[in-house]
Length: 258
Ligand SMILES: [Zn+2]
Image (cartoon, rainbow, N blue to C red):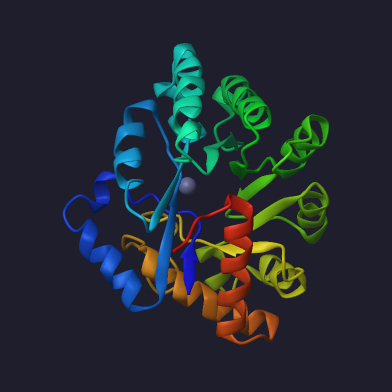
């Protein structure tokens, strides 16, 4: 069994063929999907998908959509978390984080990120973190805050030292399409050395296409390809990497998989 630990199946890119995309993924052994939210307007779509037994959901406010977020969305997010927790219908807070490429909005990004880290801490949920060009600053913040359940550093692409720092704090690293590019030499060396209990596999569909699929919509079924590449880099079998990454995802998100 494989789990896509981070995919945006709720987005409009899948509106025409969502069921087909899910069955194509299942045909290659991907049986469970974790969907992080992006904006308040999108929470209802994410939650609707979460009523399926093969999909688990997270709720949060993504830094990429910072211009859409309003201060009152944070209070709404807290209320939603309380409601969902009562029925065990949420597995994490996120996607939240900091994207250093968008320098103009960094203060606002940190404001929403900090607020969501505090919600994760208060409600004892893991957090799903989008962290681009900000590994050291985010690591520092996580060290200060000490979240009880840790979380996922989604699409990790830093150095081995940065990986170690996150692992020491109890976080799990998300490995996706980036590892399939031969030019990603540093990341590939990191992946080869990671401990067995430190990573999950993900696609970030519809974004982050794999090598060979540039320009196309990414799909959760391609987590099988990510698994093959990670296995080759680690000199393990694909079956072993599938089992390890699935067990890590189940533990991280406390997934109830039937
Ligand atoms: Zn994402």
